[in-house]
Image (cartoon, one colour):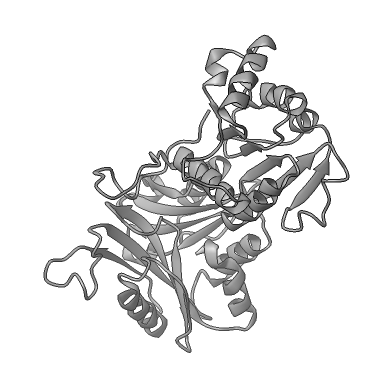
Length: 377
């Protein structure tokens, strides 16, 4: 539900009652990932999606029922030969959704509203909800902050709440959304295990584009569309301007390798080198290929690529480090314009992140929807 935080916080401020259906588990060729959500208010207004359209109508009805009776519910949707086009997933996948009413009488309204506020403001937090366990705990929520403190309870089970909050905090630190099962301690003897679904809210991944060229302008726009925090960096102040790159989150005037050396990167960061000039490319790529980032790509012709590799070897870059370089950058789409080239680069970044091949799906036997791969080291 945190992916709808901005709109849902507005609903909270307007004192609307609503219910949220959140995807908590998927299987097979499911169209949406865990964490995807559909919300319905008491007037019937709907936002979001849990299936790309396959079961939206049935989930909408579940939200309406949850608003009426005030009880959370977990429901499973999969392919059904006899009812596939009514409420089944025609793609053959399976999704499980947790429907949570957020009304004035809901026991966890304050917890959920606090999580929505943190998400809407771009904070770092996790929301853990019970998706399997005793009926009286289904849907109960814990809002876990970046300092490991938490808001919310599990009824009369404070020790379990503290343990669950610690485990959810580990998900937050890893930037993961997923589930864990907590075996009950002595205080909860006889209650059975509790399974939690954790939505981790972390800052968006970074895309750093080096080189203030026309191709960079198109790539900045594409990066923003894909949800990246985009930085444009170039050593030339006449080209690296806010007027030329209004969509960028940051425009930095500095030597690329010097900026990369001092800025924050992590295993989700993607680095796109479009400078196309050896005096920038070589020192920059020497730094980039030694960082634990998700993707390093560099623009240039095949002749430029061969010359660049030779220069990189001369400054001590190893063959293992060179193997991480995506060059020439992008997938072979036959791209010519800056916009088409940006699309080819974005497609390669997605394929690298998700383990895709970049090959046409027509005639292929590989899964359409893959489980997300661990971030590149």
